[in-house]
Amino acid sequence: MDDYANPLLHRLKWAYLLLVVLTLMSPVFYVMYISFNQNGFGANEYVFTLEWYGLIFSDKLLMGALGWTMALSVTTTLIAVPMALLAAKYYKAAQNKLLPVFLMLAPLFVAPDILGSALLVFFKNLNGTMVTLGDALGTGLFDGWFDLGFATSLVGLIIYTIPYSFVVILITMGRYRSEQTEAARACGANGWRAFWDIEFPQIRAGIFSAAAFTVILCFNEYTRTSLLKGGFDTFTTVLVSQMLNTGMSEQSYAMSSFVSFIAIAVIGGIIVYTLVRAEILSKEARAKSAPVMST
Amino acid sequence: MAPHTPRRADGPPVGTHRASMMDRLSKGVFYLPIVFMMLFFALPMALTVVFSVFERTMFWMEPGFTLFAYENFIFSARLTNFLSSMYYSLISVAICFVLGFPIAVFLRKSVPQVAQHRVVLLFILPFMVSEIIRVFALRPVLQRNGLVNTTLQNLGLIDEPITALLYTHTGVIIGEVMSFLPFIVFSGFLAMEAVPKYIFEVCDDLGAGPVRRFVDVILPLAAPGIFAGCVFIFVNGLGVALLPNILGGAGAVNAGLIATQAIAALDFPLAMAVSAIMMTTLMTLLYIGHRLFDLTKILSPIN
Image 1: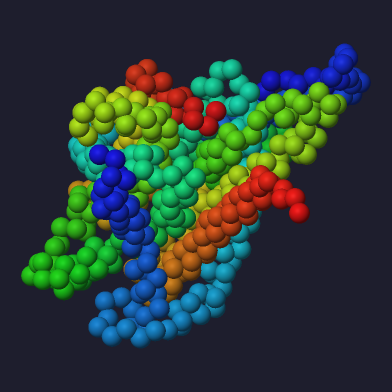
Image 2: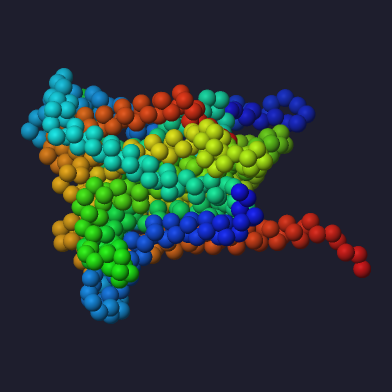
């Protein structure tokens, strides 16, 4: 039956959709609620406080981890997003799309623990091979190239985030007409200028969304990073080790909520920006298409 | 990447030797992501098979050929756990499909096109919060004195708290559904692009009921996306160690947990054997899916 012939059914479907979103978000909202309670989880009396949040910022270990997380997120974004863009352009032009699709999307289907374990053993073996090679050549030049640390975590995060960026950029590129690039090239523009002056302004929103998405994904990632990070700590590894060692303390609730607030603010900001921008563009389009009234 | 030789509209190719070299270089740049993914994704995953037959040493492993890791996996409780985690993953897939796919159909069928992508963004929102946090956050929701039990008791629906919600297989399934449900909405949404809106009207005109319409029309057309979404949930249900670790009881063990436990025990060949089995499972599923439905069609709406 047509939804518009039965408005009640239509509203019920909307209600179901929103209920599912709310249910998916409910654990996070509940943790946020607990994080503001002076008496913590399960207490009979709810007393509002910001004390637990204050404790996060006085925790030097956590602040150090936050620094590492930021560094990883920014570096991953600077590498993964341009790579995803290149991959998307390669995919658009490729005759055989199976290989790029497989390589770019397959990491989505590999569970984090499996990918993390595979990369951990791969890097440790690679490191051993490099040391053996160095020994054979009588040099220590190759030692420690693939020691677990920032670089290996970075590789893990790039593999994790690149499929998301690839899809987001590809969706944006779907609206771009390649004839415009061809026209620019025919006018004598080189590949870079045709991209930068013609294509980039039209896919900019997708690239920035992919960047924001990547930062958030890196900020939230735990499994691969914990296996590949070596000696330093990230925000989530500190959070999880505290949760596993001492259980969910009031500070853990505050830390979880803090990360969630940042993520929701960023994605919420993107949604609001997209809506406002779409509204402005549609107003402009309406104004341009309106007939000029002669006086 | 298809090369673009700079041309003037009315003449031969423009450019010096330097320009053509730059063009060749810039063409090479487009292969970077492919090379990177080959080196750091495809190769390590393929090498899991090789490392899985290495011999275990005290703290590491050494080259050799032994199937001990596979024996260790097959002739122990690990295989039973793996198979039972397959069973519970299938249940999660079914629940996610039943709950999530109708949303994708509703979005495509009944929501105006301009609003569709914005509504999909709502389902990205849970992903913006760390999976760790979401899974940990389920504990206070599902535990004895948690949100669910308190609410049900306050509503007078139950007298005693339900204890089966946490530290059981049910807890793991709830966690999987809460973690992966949006993926069936995303893949279903992409898949429904292959089902034109007029199909619904034609079905209505021909008097086909919702079940007939779903089985005979929507399912065959949207099959690649549905399959991809289901494989994603199934494989992650098998491989995300966090879920059984945090929400499951003593018997809740999946492949991811077996691999991480093996690494913690410094049994690297076993971890690699589990990874290789997971990769084989995934590749087999994707191969079957590709043969049956041509999975590249999933991205055809954005080509």
